Length: 381
Image 1 (cartoon, helix red, strand yellow):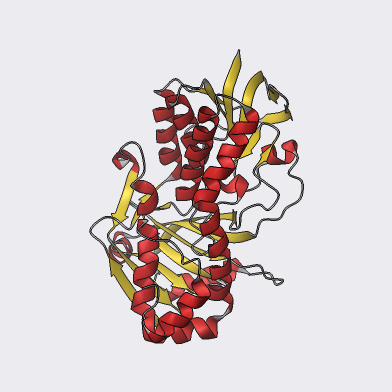
Image 2 (cartoon, one colour; image 1 turned 180 degrees about the vertical axis):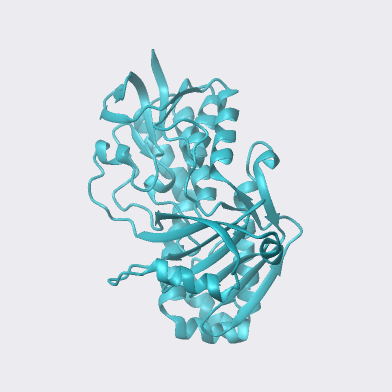
């Protein structure tokens, strides 16, 4: 059998790509190295701009959801709260969330090969894939195997040009009283870690708390040290158990293309996480959809599929990401200007970021002119 599409990885990007490919009539296979459901390190905060475009209901895997968010700036003790009628951020656990998308994809006929690691790929008119125990042929291969993407390396992406930033998260089981104190709000604490932030995400019965450094630095960010300071600063004291997980978030897109022969990159493998917030689930799902649509619309013509995929990325996502990279440098590195603006326009900024979370607006492409103009009026007006 020759598959139209073989997707490597069953995370949000891969499962989304498989779902849409199969729905569009393509014979599709997911190759996943672990048995599903599997634990995946992730903050698990799914913003509304991604959730509202899901093609099916996800309520069965929702841990909690928040119509309000606290944004705190540690250095200047500035705190802002935003609220919306729809949930700004939905908390999920990646094992159940990812598995739900896979199961929905299987309803459209997607085959699932789990517990098999891809160990070799020979691109060509028909790609030849070798896993631990199987040999597979596919016309198109979609690499959706995360930030470190072994598939991308096998296919020729050997130079790292994404901005790769470290994060550290703990899943905390706390006392009932402690959980009650922290379960009512999702919060982001900017500067809780240098050039980054800390987060506290209440799930159904526990807290996901972490810190991340979201700009390149020559120094060791010492995230464990900043994590403990952060936990203390937000008043978490009664911890029963904790489980630490470190991970890397690519927060800038690759500069050497997203297609090589018939291998297409999506999600973290391509570097599609939001550069300002480091939120990656929304763009992972969206890029999977774009890739599947490009292949389907090409009638399985490789050259046309590549052209369509790049056109779809350039229509919205890539310009937003490029602007986001520039804004993130201004936001995290130029704290003097940022905090000066926050003193005057902090609530406007918090509302604007929430609008981005909601998918109601994006980052202004003329941000330098926008900042100068808002210094006289309002930020992100």
